[in-house]
Image (cartoon, rainbow, N blue to C red):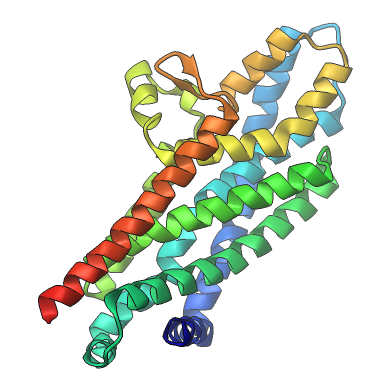
Length: 302
């Protein structure tokens, strides 16, 4: 265990010493928050107003409730994207060690491949989690100003979602970065992931607006359920307030469908418990694959 802890400390210290990489990782969620609030905020607000006017034309809905809807959707979108994309910045050390030859010095020693894999994974997980927790706090502050409908349990569940998604993102980036051997490659992969992941996980555009075959396709992706879990927990208080105003439950379910709080797998609604099981199961599978890849590489070298 001392070897693993030494590797974790070494990888974590190197990340935080690289000011450029640290700044890039920290500023990315903040930029997303500003962009979301600036360019998507009005779009989400108009959409919610139209939906609420259609389903409950005689019920007066406060601006605070509308802003709470918008804030919850922005909040969940940002965290759904950042928890995965930031891991590719945090995990660049794995590729840097290959580029500068440090990995050769490490593998000469009797360090097991599984220890090396755990060292990279855990250090990436820690650094990404710290950054995403900062992003979460920033989003909570933002929501407190525009429309707060969260309780303590909601916040705990959001933190749990962030924890699991960071584990998933770290495992995914670790497997992909395993095959990279230059800074240019990881920059290209990071750009592709940053630009595409938000769409396929439903963060930028609700999956309910996709064509039916595409909805069925993304229903296999774990990121879809991560986004939905964050949606449900960040908007639970908003939906409870809607019920208190007398808005019919069927109408509220329609709103949930439109923003992916409800996910359907071939027309079958997926329960929240199943979302957790699938997301955790895929994450553990990816972690196992990553460790086995490193064990196999070590055996081939011997």
